[in-house]
Length: 224
Image 1: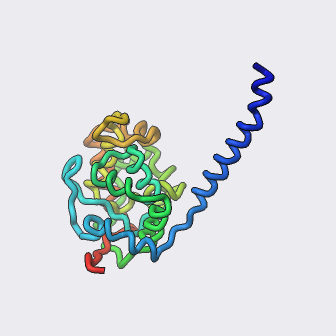
Image 2: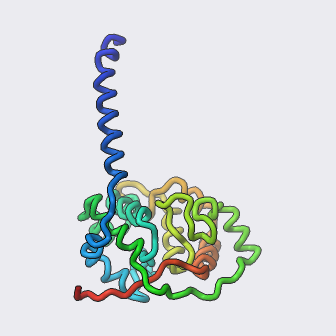
Image 3: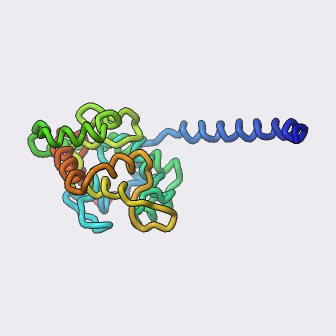
């Protein structure tokens, strides 16, 4: 058995090296803004209309994505394609995209901005809301003002639609598997969101939506 391991070890090392090289190559993909602009035609029917609503899994505004980080847009598209995020429309769209497509769309939407529509005047969190945010440790990942994530693959939350944030947070509390039709599969967020009642998740979402934001819904013509 030991001799077999000695014989196979070089192959394992070679395979690991190839895997690492492939991973590095995937991570090194650079998004092209102009290419992303052309590919965004499939996105504008929802994300380019102010006030547009989605009905899955319940009625809520589609999220603001103009001004989000490129890495977050890429990671969310990969999650829809893999099935870690359950949404039939987004699964279908993401499933048609290559990793380069995702990088291009991320680059486009990261810089695709107009004068943002400011949310309501930001107010200090109430003691109760502040306690909820502290319990969840939200600032540790999503950063100052919940708009400077520690990791660029994490979303900016400040100024996002309250009803979308609420639906997203609820989705993390639903246990998922390959056959699930609802929910989001993320061990960290599942553990955090499951600490709260639905009323508490709604309170957190309402507060975050009122913070100053870099994100916006930028109207786009369907005729480009």
